[in-house]
Image 1 (cartoon, rainbow, N blue to C red):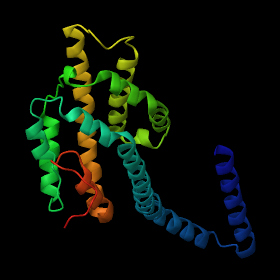
Image 2: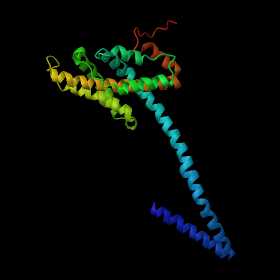
Image 3: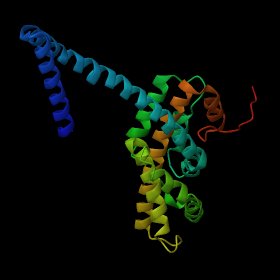
Length: 241
């Protein structure tokens, strides 16, 4: 950059010198030089700030669209299953289901209230109500998929979804680290309950944001989610009305 700057400055000096040799008019040289320098801050503002912000905004929007596609693949592959699988492990699962029961009539305020509710909960699952061996087997089968997501540099820019991935990956690692999941002491059951609760909370919060995005951008996908999500009594993809 220093060499390039020196070259351009040298070319500018040569051209000004040639101009002086031809016209012998230093007065006009300094007038135009000062005029160009006066316009320079405005040019920096337009090119370096305004245009750059517009391009950055468009690039960020495109990345967000691609990210939401990956988030959708995550919930289709394992996130929705985990939400349904872990829901019954909570004492207040009825209240959680009512609060998270997204319908086609939901507005932004409904999503906000649901996110505030999930974010304010100190969620701790009863690990004894969960088939830990079955969960371990399921997550083991999804391990490559999770690692591929974590290796995606674009996803790491989204802190919330990264937290979801880490919480689920941590549950997988905790279960895999135990040779046996039967006859665990109560202290270990409590520990696993905390890990499961953390994963569920992250999953639920991320799911709400994803579903709200679908409602705004892809109503046909939102319609499927409304019919199949696990927070209703009888989820079914079949259109009945």
